[in-house]
Amino acid sequence: MYKSNNLKISCFFLTIYGMVLTGSDFMLIIGSHVGFKKDSQLLGSLEEALSYNSNTFMFYTGAPQNTMRYPIDDEITLKAKEIMKEKNIDYSKVIVHAPYIINLANNKEKEKYEFSINFLKEEVARCEQLGIKYLVLHPGSHVGLGVEEGIKNIINALNIILENSKVTILLETMAGKGSEIGSNFKELKKIIVKIKNKDRIGVCMDTCHMNDAGYDLTNFDQLLNYFDEVVGLDYVHCIHINDSKNEKSSHKDRHENIGFGTIGFDTLINIIYNDKLKDIPKILETPYVVKNPPYKDEIEMIKNKKFNKDLKTNLENS
Image (spheres, rainbow, N blue to C red):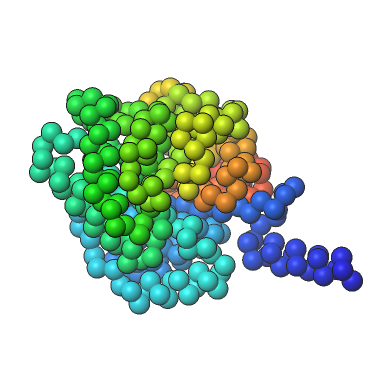
C-alpha cells in the first residue's frame, strides 16, 4: 500500500510538469522567447508558450528596438496569472528582457546616457506592475571609452535604477562583439561587487554568447566551477539556450537552432540537465526557420534528449 501511494504521488508530479524525471528530482523548466502584443499582452504570451509545450517563457514588454510602449492591462495580467496557476507554471520563473536600445556603459553623450537610465527605470516599473521578478539586460558597450570606464558607468546607472526596485536585473553574458562589456566573467564580477542592492542583481547565462566569447562548454561542470569562483552560482537565475553559427572565440553572436550549430546537441543537453542549474529557467532564443517558430519541436527534442536531424527541413516544408 505504501509503495502504491508513492507511485501515485510520483505520477501526479510527473503529470503536472508534463515530463519525465531522469535519475533524480530534476524538473525541467523550459520555454522560449514569445510575443507580447497590445491587445492580448501577457495572456497572449502565455497562450503562445503553451502552444510550444513550455512551462515558462520570456518576452519584451514592447518592441526591443524602440521606445513605443502600450499601458499594461491589469485585468489581462490577472487572467493570465490565473491560467498559469491552473497549469502549474511558476510565474517567478517567467522572464522579461530589456530593450536592446539601452546602453548603460557609455556616458559620452549625457542625454543618451540619461535616456538609457530613465528608459530602464520605466521597464523596471512595467515589470513591477506585471509582477515579474527577473529582467534580463545586456550590460552595454563602452564605444571607445574603455572597459573600465564602461563598467563604472554601468555601476553608476544600476545603483540609481535598483535603489528601490522590486525587480532583479540579470546581466547577460555577452559574446564580446564590438565593445560589449560582459563577455568576461570577471567584468560581470566587477559590476556586481559595486552594486549596493545585492538582492536585486544577478546573471543570465547565454550558451551562444559564452561559446562565442571563448568559453569551452564541453566541460560545463568545470566552467560552472570557474564561474562560481569568480562570480558565484547563486547569482545565476536564467540561462538562454542557443546553439551558435560560429566557432568558439568568434565574438560574433549569431544564434543557431538546437543541435545544428558548433556547440552541438549533446553539449547543450548536458548544460540543460546539469543538476547545478536544475531550478533555473532555460529559455530558447533560436531563429525561426523560414517564418516558422522552432520552439515546440526543439522543446520536444530536449525533453526526449534525442536530436531530430530533420527538424529544419520539416519546418521549411510546413
